[in-house]
Each structure stands twice: as structure tokens, then as C-alpha cells.
Image 1 (tube, rainbow, N blue to C red):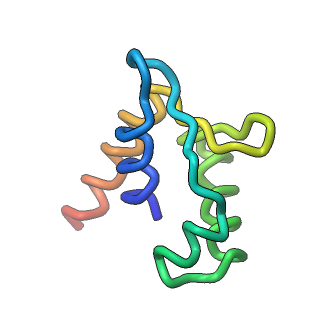
Image 2 (image 1 turned 180 degrees about the horizontal axis):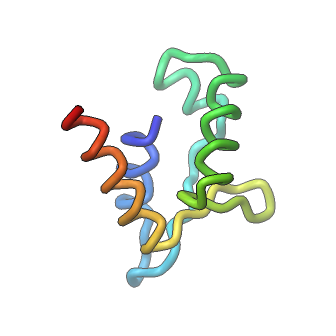
Length: 79
């Protein structure tokens, strides 16, 4: 899930500002082969840990959040 969000954030960042993730949660779930409930649970956890924000129902990832999310994924892959 985090890798998908990183990819989408990189594709949708404009002028090094926040990226607004265009995919709906239903499409993320279908793309990852998981339930919407699981998507919502992961998004909630990532938001609580300040890896992303929610604005007007959209997932928003600021440049600093993206950097931290990428570091977390790299650390997870190393274990």
C-alpha cells in the first residue's frame, strides 16, 4: 500500500508541492487485491503517523511526508 502511495505521489506532484492522490480507495483496493476496509485501515494508520493527510476526502502527501514514507518503506524492505 505504501509503495503504491509513493508511486502515485511521485506521479502527481506539481512544482515540488503536495501531491493529491487521484485514485479512489475502491480502485486502490482493486489494484492491490485487498478490501476497502484494509485500505481504510492502512490510510488511517498512515495519517495517525503523519505520513499523509486527508483534505476534502482526498489523500494529500506533502514533500516531507513523502520523504519519510519512502524512508519507512526502505527500512521495512531491509528487515
